[in-house]
Image (cartoon, rainbow, N blue to C red; front, side, top):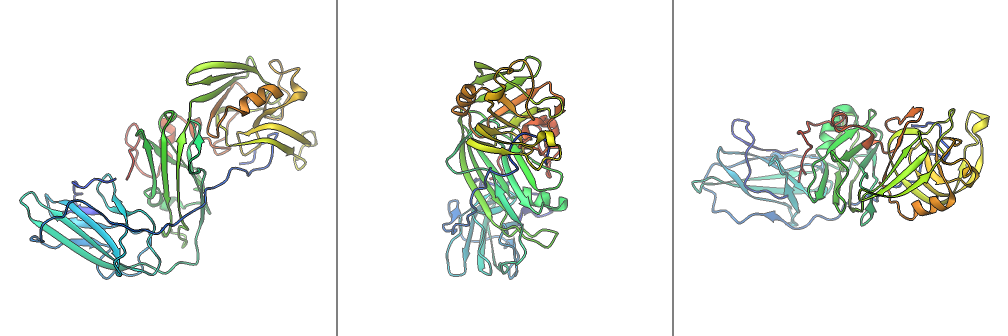
Length: 417
């Protein structure tokens, strides 16, 4: 990874600124899908107004001139004379096909907008100007490595042009998990931009198989999320490489929140902060309690079958047709229609961990909820286990940022590109 630095190892200020199985009553893990990965062709250049002819000392670039076997995730950097600012960065194949890219907002390097091609020679050119009009220029010709045979697999739980709830975390997944020593390097290549701008942070689960991105508070209704998990070609310490870049652009819809209290066995439904409906519920019985915490709707099925015949407890084995199911945990907790418990809803807990509502109320909810809508459950015998679903919002902001592999400014980090 390249860097733009001043002589003396101080970073330059750049003038160019571009941009878990637990008991439950539902199906086995699965359902929520990844977006398809893509590595579109990279064409076109990015530059500011042309500078004058070079008159200052030449710049030293990274990758170094003549470098070979560079990863396709490589970024362009330069060592700058004191007081100078970058005025132009270009990257092209030796045949002249230009590559689009952007400077990091912190000015540390120039990032190609798509992975470079394997076994390809590129020419990078950086121009920098000083206040007295002196212009320095540097050129580097380097070659990327051949495609490796050992790669991880990855996923992104976000789809282009879809509308999600205000608690939708950006969820990146990796198999096998990213080793702890590599997480900072990988995290620097996971880009999230929000419009309107909202600071955020990443949080890694302990085994490195998932990372969540969220803001200090729920997303603002109407937010546009633009995500790039630029994993392709990143070399890892376990001898593997990142497999592919994944991108998605999605929208956050209205604020739709469900709040359940076990004390009165009621669900209160809010839209844009206004209470719009109160529903009686039946939660998990004492032996199979519902999880208390802030959960997120991960998947919706109008009709499905709950099959728990592999449960070690014979009392928890059954096969049942279910309507209007909304998954909350990987362990099998859902909101769903339960006509068999309507007579006790609002008075008694009889489920295997799910939130039971009447068929009419289940339909009403199903027609209004979005993937990413939050539901908070309070007062049950079990606390939500981290990683049992999209649990990013079940942590306080102070706890959440502790899971970042990079330092997080107070209040959250701004977009990196």
